[in-house]
Image (cartoon, rainbow, N blue to C red; front, side, top):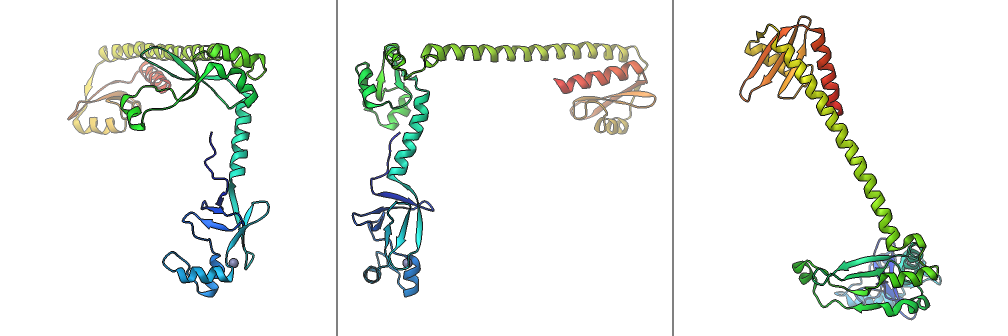
Length: 303
Ligand SMILES: [Zn+2]
């Protein structure tokens, strides 16, 4: 991670960026002195690039900001109004170093990319290490400078090594494990082993889930057969269009499905949506059939 702040750059509360000069005076990004809006307003001044006269006046009256000693705020020299500073080069640097410390705890090599033509694999360190430690492994690294534009990278969609990379991760690991910088469980091999175990676990769970679904599907298939048999062997009554329409849209089991069922006091009604009309038949009530329907739609919900 790189600190993109200039040494004298600050970010004010609210996100605005500015700079302080060698006297601590605050200068905006446009190179113009930052004036205190409150003081300027009281004097009716509108200092801007197109209003140089007011700039001179505001400067003369001292409506300018200076950075305070601990760099936590800018202060108006006239009225003493403070605006908090959110970030400075130093706070950004401290943030980066803290993050790097966290990452150092977990230092390991990462596959930065693979050259598909020659099959070479390039590895990088997952965090910046101390310079003296770096010297111990530097000989295994090479600095690759990108010769491609972003457009080219997108166009060719293949890996071009950039930054400090090694093709000998094992040698680097050996040294850094011996130095106590890489934990022995964080070598590429150990990480790959853990990933393989994780994958196995996931695959197993997936298989179990599929098996369970298959089992439910089979159970539903058996029930469907039984329901069909009951319907086939029963005396059937064909529903009128109006009746079929009514039962189809208020079905007790499988509402919204192409085929559904309703159990009444003395009949079991089966309706099918046929594209441009609804066909319905009824058979005399059967306790067995009602139980089968209950079971079928309970399983349907689990599926
Ligand atoms: Zn002021």
